Image (cartoon, rainbow, N blue to C red; front, side, top):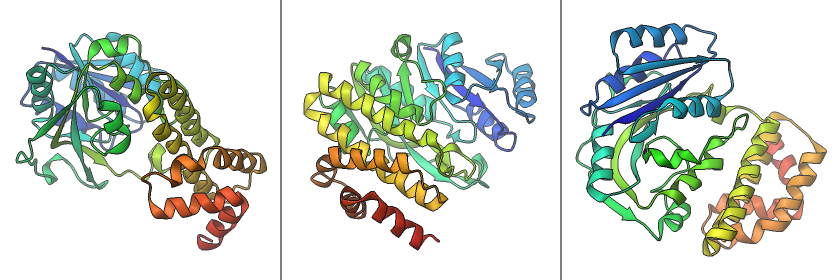
Length: 319
């Protein structure tokens, strides 16, 4: 059983060695590591080549900057593994990560296995954190996998922290040029998996990086989340109609995030506000009448009445 590990690389010279070392320290040895240098302007590409010279399991792709999706797709394109997993280059994994996820797939005849995540600061490295092997319980989901995806924290939207049977990516590709690429794709991978096994083992370490895409100030590209949620809602309406209400709920969640981001950044885009107003009026009922954070519901309710009110209040409290 060969596992292909795909790591997109861009401007991460500070963290890259720690990420690669965490892979090389895996107890599971039958893997190939694909490092995709996405036109990084720092020394990241050089670091990739240095590691490739030390270990024949490491392959390096150098390409012009195309973004995270383009880098992942390039890695998928040359992957030879029976299974694939993705790691963001500023994150890292604990030593038993591959071993646990591979056994979960094999022992349960599953196309996807999932583990939990641990957060760390920008200063932490593999040596600073201890792997916890005491939490090894797992659950298997087949017919109810989409309900679990939308209604629990057991199946997150992020592409990382998961091991996928490689056939899944014969048809699924990441959307080049889009932010929030995982919202566009993860539900498709879950749909294609015959069975999903989720463990409470926390093997993936997510670094809180203030320079990451997730933490950027307002940009029109944040609307990609709405685009992705809308596509996902259409998919669910045709394939999982009982779950479509949860897909619509997510649209309002990201409306809240965009409106807050606009206000905090001082962006008063009238066209964007009009668009948000229409979305609140169309989908609010799916958000407020289902399980959602109370503060988020209040924010959405006021926005339903008039987005200019919530925009102004957010500006006032963050001025």
